[in-house]
Length: 207
Image 1 (spheres, helix red, strand yellow):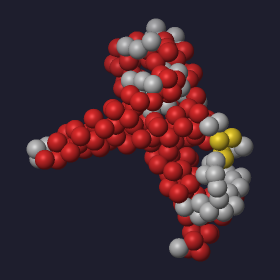
Image 2 (image 1 turned 180 degrees about the horizontal axis):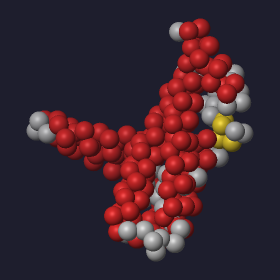
Image 3 (image 1 turned 120 degrees about the vertical axis):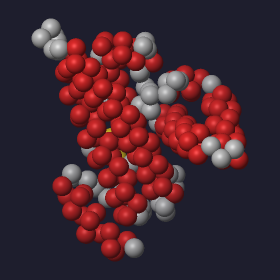
Image 4 (image 1 turned 90 degrees about the horizontal axis):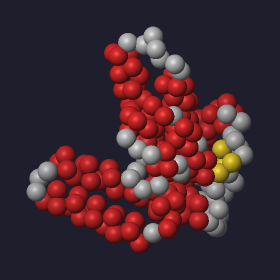
């Protein structure tokens, strides 16, 4: 219950100078906060890995360069997973709130969902990463979930988002009926990302 979570919340909140959002459930708030802290850890690691990639690497062996690239790709995947978990945590927290309209989750004096939208935009300037992913810089901007469409693209065509989510859910159902566990898992994971994408898109729209 809430009373059980209070000591945990108080200690974590104090460590990060985090202020409780009045009218919301501390247990759900703590879950969202923990998801943010995990994501922030990956964001910091990604920053360091980007700096490594941008350093002149004349002395690095091909194997070392390959290792740096593999580290970067791994961190991108982990950051994306952590980003989806943050959105889901904030949505659950909002659903448990007694205030209207839905509250904004503030982290270090800013709306964390809005921070997420653009806090990886610097990756668009990491040329070795663009080459590795075979994408243009614009594909990275305002695309925290690293999907084929940026949030800017999405905001111009929301109807397409709904159609794609329906197609993904239909693919998950078909895979389940066919006994294709891997296909079902992949489609369900894609649907999670698409739902998270919609939440971020809505956040931008009502900002």
